[in-house]
Length: 281
Ligand code: FAD
Ligand code: FES
Ligand code: MG
Image (tube, rainbow, N blue to C red; front, top):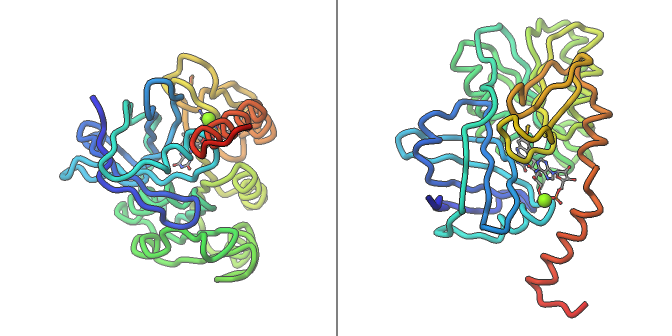
């Protein structure tokens, strides 16, 4: 069954929003879950987090960054186009309950998966302090939506063009040093950011959850591509996660595995661009 794109737009340079008609997935989706999609028959499957869902409209929304061949091809689709297949919702829903004060940290495109969780933590009666960061102000995502679902929001930019000049970890550290009672931290973004957040919260002994973006092929526990090391145990991020205790994750192994196919990914992207732009190399 093809899945129709109801809305597609570029939110900030290289980051796109896509709303898709998928009533069965929308009906079951929970914060923290993801889908696997394939654009067309020869295409590879890629995982994307469900950034929002509307059960009444029967739609799910994904926010993705065009980083390689498949996400670039996806970014070149338009409203009205169709995806060949979409499976989900996959992965375990985020653990939402009334903890007290929850700090939500989103970096770059990671702000999108943080959003439905921040909303759910607020609905569950928590005080939500959100920290969202980007390299520069023009790359900041969903500040307005995050503001709506947070009690307090902090902005950081690496170049100082908006909010705090520095990293999300600076604010996490300040909040904890100020002796704010924090019951849980949830961090989603590039692995290097999640590792840094884990490093900041560990000495304060604050439970910290990260969502791991390991390479996934089937997304249902069969291929082993997504294996990660958590507390010295091998886990499959697609079925055991994607959320894990940040203080137990081997981030070095995660990052090494994410870089495993970079030469092939580079060739695939160059070939895609050549085919699309008609180069003669
Ligand atoms: P490529 O050039 O093929 O790869 C670029 C880099 O992306 C690689 O070096 C590798 O680190 C990673 N990657 C490649 N293939 C995969 C794969 N099959 N699975 C996972 N990572 C891969 N990105 C978003 O922008 N928005 C999201 O909401 C989002 N949610 C995710 C949820 C989960 C559970 C996971 C595991 C990943 C998520 N990602 C998300 C990452 C996204 O899947 C990759 O950026 C995408 O697969 C890259 O594909 P590509 O062909 O465009 O790039
Ligand atoms: Fe295949 Fe997780 S993606 S086992
Ligand atoms: Mg790819």
